[in-house]
Image 1: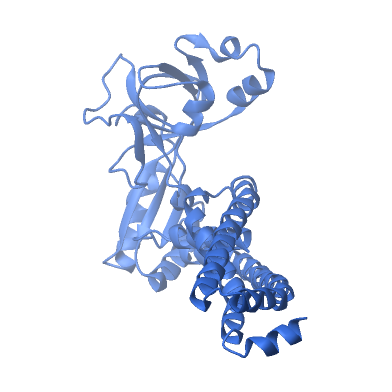
Image 2 (image 1 turned 135 degrees about the horizontal axis):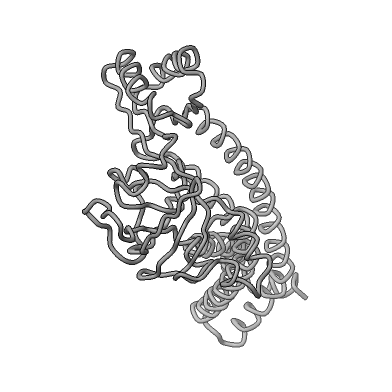
Length: 355
């Protein structure tokens, strides 16, 4: 029950955070430099309230790290060397930080790229960690046969499922001007206007690839909702099974517990003392059951969420503990209350029936 609760909640939270507060209506790919003005003017003519944001995209390969060729740097790790030399890095400018990138270390800059000197660069944390890079290191890329030397000034992380373009490197403005052959962008407008804009782009500028975010979010939402519904069904069955098992265990010991309680009463123990002992015992059992269920459920759910779903769930442990506590309390107190009620009957009758 705890494991299913953690997985369901993780999926539902992922669905919520997938939808940005101000989601663009359209995502644009492969806009050529000479088409930028036509695209912006055309979209504005269709919807005067629309706003278009275009970012340059340059694909490059990593050639050197701190003036050492990547082949030499990773000479002892053939797999890492192949991956590093084969990967394409998507480079762009900050341009107002439309992706809302979060700095892990270092600082952004405000100056444009200088001529004839290494430019400043911010690198994605995943790529930087794989190569052991940090602020102050120098890297060299090759794009269209031309070298790009950059000094890492900052490390940033992506926004997870909200990331639209997933740039691996952000450079100073002007550093890529001679290499820009395409742009990507986001269009902010209403969804009905986005449908019209998508049709207009397909007729007039067919090379531009468009993605309507409403379609993507609906598809992602449907998939996550189906997965969450399946896990919720499993969780419901687990809840019923847990209650049945715990209730059956409680009911088996109930008659014996009632017999011993009334025997103690006949020997001089007060009902209040017996009830307090029963409540203490039930409280301890509930606590132990909650701790055990929380630990075991987290041990099952957290690796699944991390490895299979690629989603963090460690901060939801308290929810698993709350569910475990509620289920344990319902089962154990459900068996205790009838016992306490029965203690009000004639002890002689209860002893005779219990014997």
